[in-house]
Length: 316
Image (cartoon, rainbow, N blue to C red; front, top):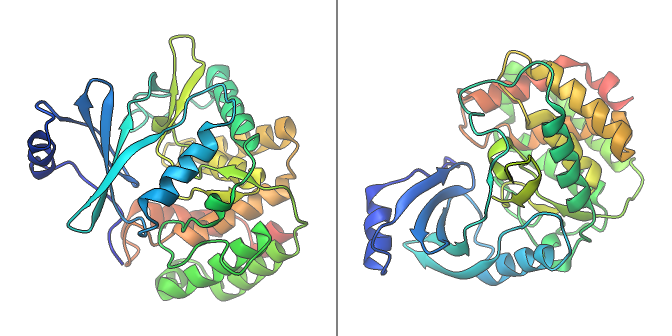
C-alpha cells in the first residue's frame, strides 16, 4: 500500500513557478496532500493517496457542500489537472487561522476551552445540515478500492462492509496488537448492520484542529481539507470521529475523547454507544493508512482504541 502522505518538494515549487505563479511557497501538508500558496488568493493542492475519482466528481462534491448556507466557508475547486499520475487542484485560499495553531507541538489543556468546543459544535451542526448528494455516495475513502456506498443503500451496511474489507488488508499485523481481532471485527460489523437507518448528510471525516479555521473571535470561518474520509454518512459518525481524533497523542487524549463524546451525545442527540461503535469502526478502517507494518503512531492509536474496551462492551 502506498504511503498516504504528500510532502512539499522543490520540484513542485518549480512546477508552479513554471505555470506562471512566480512566488509559490509551501502552506500546509497532511494526509490529503500538500498545499502551496500561489498568491492573489489562490492555492494549489497536490493530492496523495486518493483514488482517481476524477476532477468532475470532486468538483461536484465541493459544489454540493458549498451551495448550502453554512456559517463557514468550504473549498471550491476552480480548476484541476493531472501531472505524472498526481492530481492537482487549484482553489481559492480560505480565510482564518487554525482553531489551535500549535496543535502539532503543544497538547491541549486537560479542560478544553469553551471556545474550542463551541466551534466544534458549530461545525458539526453545519455539516449535518448538508443533505447527502449522489456525488458524495460515489466517493472512495482513503485506502479502499471502491466507492464506500457501492452496492449499499444504508450507511451502516456500507461501513460494515468497509470494516470487513479493511481487516483483510493487513489484519495479521493488527491481530498481533489486538487480541481477539477476528471476533471484534465480526461483532462490530454485525452491530453496525443492526443500526437503524438514519438520514445521511455530508461527512468531512477529518475534523482535526488544522482543518477548522476561525476568526479573531473564535468563530469558525472555514472548514478545509475534505478528502480523507469524506462521504455521505450518518452525522453521528462525524461526531464520533471528531471526538476521537481531536487530540490523538496528548497526555490527556483519552480524557478528551471521553469528554467530547459525552458532549456531542448530549448536545447533538447522538446515542453514546453508537458513537463508541463508530470510533471502533474508524480505527478498523484506517489502521494501515500510514504504514503496513504497524510501525507508525496512527496504527498504535487505532490498536489502543480497540483494546481500550472489550468488543462486547463496545457493541452492547
